[in-house]
Picture 1 (spheres, rainbow, N blue to C red):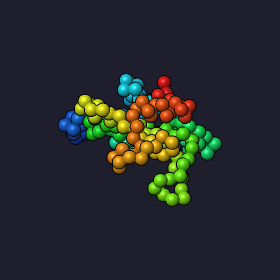
Picture 2: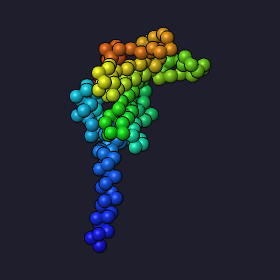
Picture 3: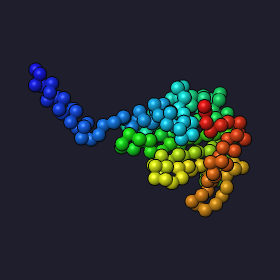
Picture 4: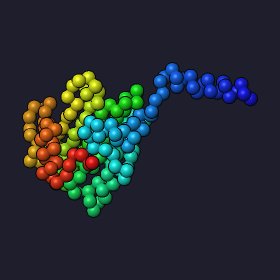
Length: 172
């Protein structure tokens, strides 16, 4: 009996040792990394948010965004987190909505929610590059430009837009 236990352990432990098992990527994408988020001046994942995802990413949704009574209020609605194979955060995108809709620029006779997305790229930061990318989807702050920068704004501009909407990028 004891031999079977050792053989079983060897089959389980050895691959983990060789492959370098660490924290699961999905766990890294969750509230367990909130201290790291704070150290990078990113919003944390509140305990009330709802999670869905795969083995290397996670979508976190504010329950108020899914509620028909509050979905059109200005809010931080979602966070999308992705981990790399080493169990480190790769990037995150936070989605903020103003509560207003504007005519779509790409689809006639339809409307888009005014949104600011703020991406933080941990891998760019580790490489010494600017980790921030902020975009506005439509509305008065949207700027038409080349296809590479349509709607792109600086982090300071994104923070100012959110303040105008009565919300803050950081939730602590």
